[in-house]
Amino acid sequence: MCISTFFTSFGRTVEMNGERYEFEFTVKHYVAFLAIGLNWVCFFLFRHLFKYVLILTLFLGIINFINFTLTERTWSVGVGNLLLSFQPVSFFISVLVYIFNFERMNKAVYELMGPTSVQDDMSSKRRKHAQFDKFRDRFSKYSDEELHDILVENKLVPEALQAVRDVLTERGKLGI
Image 1 (cartoon, rainbow, N blue to C red):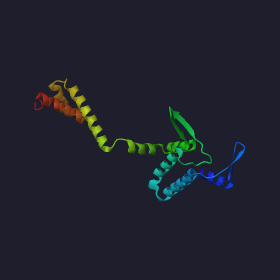
Image 2: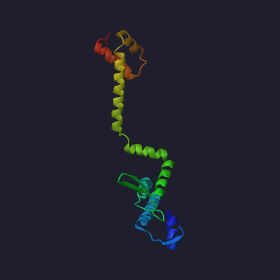
Image 3: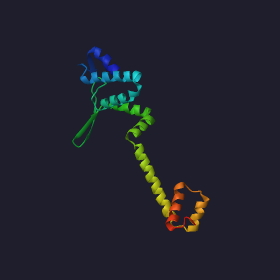
Image 4: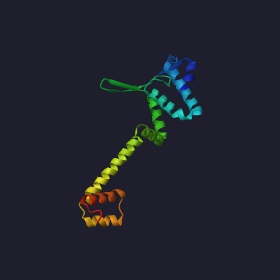
């Protein structure tokens, strides 16, 4: 799109709907050219920064801050008094980039916005504690002999066995 825009500018006129118009680059065009150049540099020299620069470029195109095409075509969506306009070309290119990089982008978003390792550890502990409590409630209805048999068989998960030990300890029957 930028190449098409660049070469069309040599003619200095653009024909649309049968009429000729003078064409001049706007600041949005220059920033778009700069962004494309920056993407090329990052792709070949600073590969670790490329995805961030690409995402920023696409975002700036979507929100109509930069313009890759001859004309500034926008779609608008209104909610009450709020009117959001965006460039459909940049939007569709962003969708294509997302489709082609689906797994990597979802992983990156999850790493960026998902739970931290501390939160993962805490939720894991909460799940284990909830599971332990469930086992404890279930085994509190068993007789002492049944609980001893469970400990001897040793066929349950560690949380269940610990719950059996706790129930027997509460009853004062663990040593029996």
